[in-house]
Length: 79
Image (cartoon, rainbow, N blue to C red; front, side):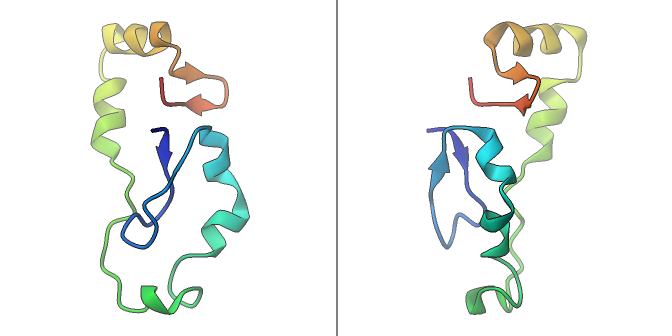
């Protein structure tokens, strides 16, 4: 599947490369003042930090992440 784009209630889409999530024009489409559907939104952003914290909580977890190929210079990617 890859990485989920921002705001899955509006657009349940994925990208294959995590670097695509850092493109400024992607984030400019969402948020109060950018999309009228976002005016009263109370939804979390979709980033689940607990997953990342677990993935790097011990040296063994770090090693597993690196061996899987998910950790690279540009960040943690979908393995």
